[in-house]
Image (cartoon, rainbow, N blue to C red; front, side):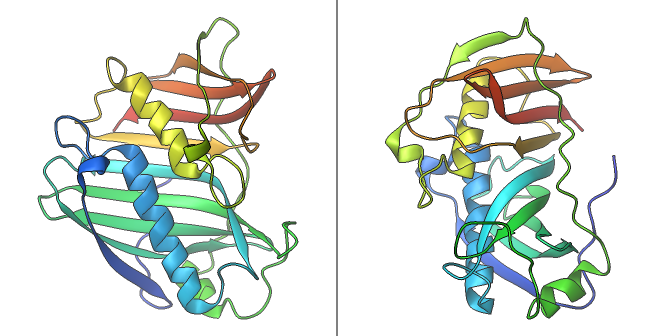
Length: 242
């Protein structure tokens, strides 16, 4: 697998710090994946709002995300985040985050987002993106998805969508998917207190009222969870040791 793009020497970077709260931690104090996803999402929103590339003129839909958790956030209670543009294409951009906890935790993240116009349709990014483009250092941003479908015999468990899982666009929020992953791994699956890689690909939105099943399956040395509704795989997550 390709290494994550390094921090740029030129172009825009944005930094912020989050205090870990009680609702962000599991019973042993580890910062959960859904909490990390919220930090990432909020840092990205603050960044684009500051540059004018945020809502309502510009909307960004997450296509895929990859977390390299070299040192899980176990005892960390403050997390410093730096984020920047790591790739650029006509209607998509890649974004990197680097997270450093105050107790030695370290998480590196890369992602791809599709750019939408005010009408909610994919739109060319166009002019004014210069600082992000410079930080990308000529790299592209691919929206291609690579995680596999679950096999037909995969164990399936109902996953009810709650109204509190929805965001402003009326779909299940990006972070809510990681809640399901955390739930499935609470009593089994990969050890999230050891170094691991976590990937999640979003294929189709999930909405309130959909009947969703989580399909669990092993792939290589990792463990996958697919979100299936009406026979359609809406998203796939994969967690594997580093």
